[in-house]
Image 1: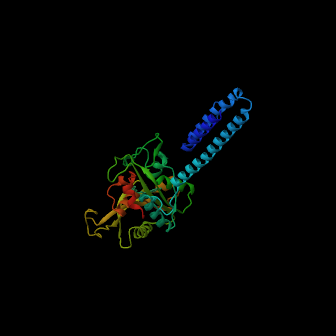
Image 2: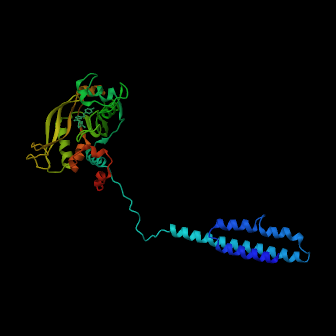
Length: 344
Ligand code: 2U9
């Protein structure tokens, strides 16, 4: 029995030393120290031994059990330490290493153009007003002097949710809603940026969704010359001191008289080139004096109040500023395109 115990002890100790994982150690513990283990077997066989031998065998069996148990525990501790060290090494961050470059995004070029234009008009005392993109037929058309079957509606076809609800075709409904809130008392001096929608085929210069900034100033004795003055300030600050402006007669149902604003071409300085189609002028926005019907429908007495309004396509300004030749680039989220605007 004693030799058997010694043999078991050596065998178990060898195995413990060779064990490479905590699982192996657990198996060795179960195997050697478990209820069905060989040491237990020896102890069960004690009954058959001569009485004088039993204490020695019993003592030896306990020594072997403790010896194996403590060696297993020791080995477990070491394996756990080794595992932790390996884990720490694997996870250790070499703080001297440069950090992983976090590619810092940037403002979308349209956002920065909008903010630039907002800052210019805020600087001239305008406040920014915004409103819903899903509009009613009344605010998007009728309040702008575009009664139900007015032909000009076709120029602004959009996406209808119901016969009365649609995706707005311009941000003008925001101006109408704001005028109503003023209950016929001026001044109203706002700019309204936002997304608008047109049921157009997308091509290099048209997108079914685009950004607009419109402006409105309603007060007593507002004249076309005030509009021209505002434009002179705006163009010089946005395009540069050396740019000229020109107001060219036009027509909009919601303004009378109406005018397109042209700025002198940056490429040829006004002499005429391919960019300005040999005209020397680049059209940038539309405008006019608010139509009396529109004032009246929004609660303002056109005998007491006059006003001017204007509207611009933001993409057009971004394309002019950054020399972008296809409006769709602004909407395809292609980082190759967008990453060019990190400094804007
Ligand atoms: C009210 C009264 C009048 C807004 C105006 C334009 C002229 C204009 C176009 C520019 C490029 C639309 O994005 S675009 O295609 N807009 O030319 N917009 S006057 O007139 C208003 C607006 C609100 C109450």
